[in-house]
Amino acid sequence: MEIITSFTNKTVKYIVSLCQKKRRAADGVFVAEGYKNVLDTVSALPENVVSVVMSESFAKMHADEFSEFNVSVTTDSVFSKMSETECSQGVLAVMEVLPEKLPESERCILLDRVRDPGNVGTILRTAAACGYDVIVNNCADIYSPKVTRSSMSALLKCRICSNEPPESIKKLGYELIAADMSGGNLFSMSKPSGKYCIVIGNEADGVSEEILGISDRTVAIPMENMESLNAAVAAAVMMFELRYGIK
View (cartoon, rainbow, N blue to C red):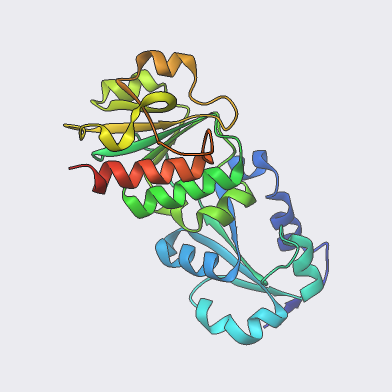
């Protein structure tokens, strides 16, 4: 197999260009990086794999695991130019994004201005694990490198839509349950009788007043010694409690 050695190679230049949101959006693709992340992502939807790129040292150990895909191999130094991490694992995949779809399951989660990519990615991963559809409104770009790393393959395992008015979610029959420090005790609330949508707000400001005003319930996680939890932690507690904990 030919090894790419030039930093100006068209494949290398294209991968580097995908660090820009507008280029990803124009081409309808995102980049997954890291051995476990790539392996899980290409396994989730192999038909959505555009290409796999790996470093020469990675290819010597793992090339056979990706032989069914369009694979390019570069020198380690060239790969480091494409990598978004300080300690690259030597493999990335370019994936086609899935079309956005409104929620249709019994449960979903709406992220209201959640800005931290790590939080967004972790919430997506938890939503996939717990069976929630996802709405992301004015949040960190879900296809940015930090989100794709922290979400693992959740971008291809969740039903996701963006910037959908919460009023539209209510019209679909979902009870809006907003996380708010002044709300009732999560562990004392009655189980939702039908479809429900958890709302997680901005890390600094919480759920917007507009959404709180149309929410059916506001709930809080009781705690000692701290006023609040990380947004991703709070989302995980609420998703699992509302699905599995409340009787």
